[in-house]
Length: 63
Image (cartoon, rainbow, N blue to C red; front, side, top):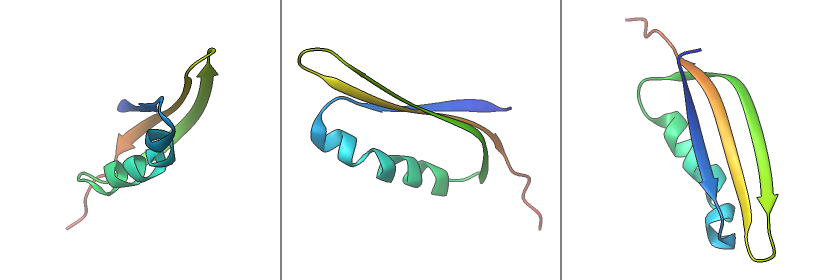
């Protein structure tokens, strides 16, 4: 493992776009290999929080 990236959202519109945020991050350099993924949902009386936690390593670029 090289790192962990955490993406979280509490508002409905933010939760809808969470997958797009993760996809955009994956497309950024350097290329990444996802080693593990955990999706967590928590809520109280007012808010629902969705969290994506991704453990990754960067891939070596070959010329």
